[in-house]
Image (cartoon, rainbow, N blue to C red; front, side, top):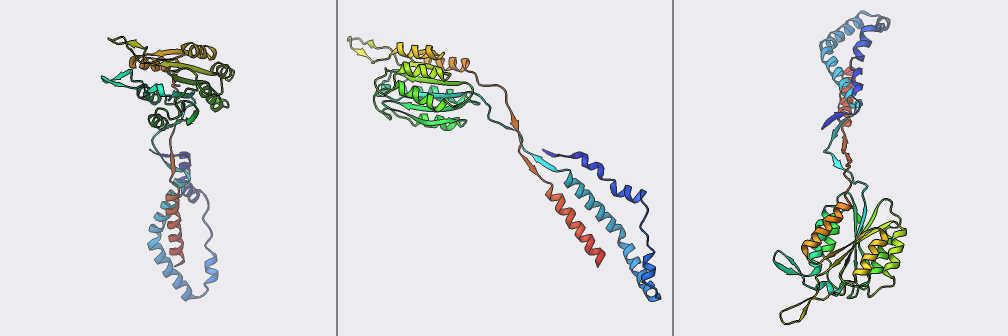
Length: 320
């Protein structure tokens, strides 16, 4: 969109005409003193005739140069399309269990049985896409916990890094306490609301930090933790053989959520997992207020350059 930053400058357009109209003309008597001879008067008269023939064009060029100069002073601009600014939403960290038990195929997506990690990638990936306005980070943990993606507005990258994770990437055991500790460290200096969504299908079997102690530290840092226990319950088949395995420590996960003011969820199948993320999304809504800015390109240099070219042309014509 084309616009002027200072459109009031155009009130100066009639200024040359007002000066010419109301101020007295400059005296022309000095020319007679400098040309006392007849031939000089004749030469001066011939120059005057030639100059009068081009005075109309010179006046037009001068008016055009003044118009361009005033236009440049009004700061013409081209404003681009409105671009949304990153909003000050929540700092939200996802912690995903990659221990060996996540390979259990007890989830069904599209009539196909898949393992727990694949179901997590699909459901959590859709959740990440909807968090526009929040900064989202990703922690992956198994026997060790490490930061896969720092807090960022680049949700596409976070989702890609989650999709690239694989089972046993961080070891076969489960360090829930260390995952919470790492989240505390990454969120400690952040202002505003801080949320951790922790998913696990087992119990704390590794790491240096006790999960409940870590939860108490998280509560001191105003870090709210939502815990998700993932995996179907073990069941017996026709021959009495138990299918599926679960060492899920629901008691600890529930207590972690309670200490930090969050909530514990149980996901036994894909539908429940989707419902859980929908529930968290409703409890932690993205800020609705949006701010925009328009990129502005200044264009004043174009009319200014044209005005200078015309002024130089008039000066050359006058001296010729």
